[in-house]
Length: 411
Image 1 (tube, rainbow, N blue to C red):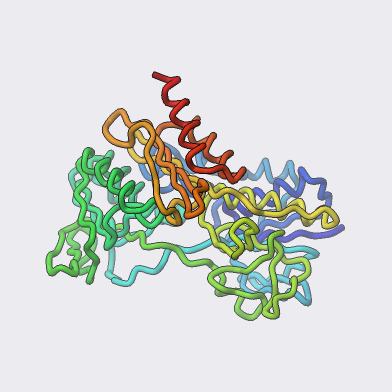
Image 2: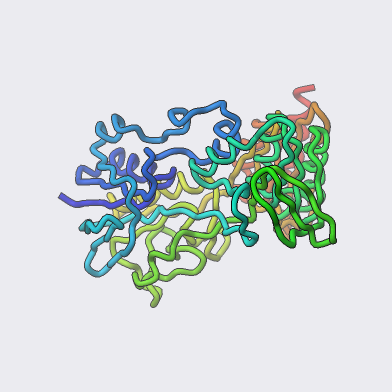
């Protein structure tokens, strides 16, 4: 009876295990994770869970009952320490060794280490315990400094402000999420935070942090400083791949895979039986002609489905070549992003991405005039259309025409 070991209990790992059963795998499935908690969903950690609107049950992806029903063995609270692809073994931190016929690496990414260590009061938000620790410090009226204006920083800022904290966001870029949507559309998100009372120090970096919980001081590189009861640092993530250093796999800011989610070794050959999915995988994309590591929930789920199919049906390999998609909930805005807006030469707006009644889209065109990305606010129909047209390689002007007709129809 063939055994599939799945290393990692976030959405990528859980979806692989579930998809293996739906694809017809009737052998053993063992899901390994270093955390002691049942597998849980991470996007709510900076939003609903942090705000107290969801408890652990509300973010759990796989209960013991569900795992039992699917015949998935859970090995929780013990990290994977060493992978031997030739011997097809996996050694865990508790000293046990697991033999496998196929292994899926879904260990994801960890928050980038805080470069300004202090005794207490400085947080990252990557795992359940991180969110619990931060939630305890979200006191109405208390000053919170958020370092980093990416998705995590912007979502934490929105959640904390809604909880009554006095929030300041610091980032060396001129606008939040600017690395993804560009500075002009990013400026509209700055306005969103300003309307809700968040202060911003964009274009400014952090030189250091001093003190401890309740009495922190954030030193900025322009010579000024900010007082804070707590600080959240969201300056990116790094793949959790150090434990694979002796595996012989190719590691380049993540586990390198081919277009079928199969890991490759240092020589570039397929590592038989080894697959990688999720935030820690750098997969080859046909459409882009290069390898990409994407830290998105949708990407992790889609990769999981492809890997599970290819394990069960290697004679009918599927390709992972998606249209990238990510969403973010901030205040009453549902922000959806597809494709790669940052690679565009130009963009145009349809509707409005400003004010309390925002409902609009930004359409991004590449140098060849084709649609290469889209950002929508509170307009799911527009995003559905854009994702489909991105997959079809549609010209940006045609997309704009379709969106304007859709916008006129609702008036």
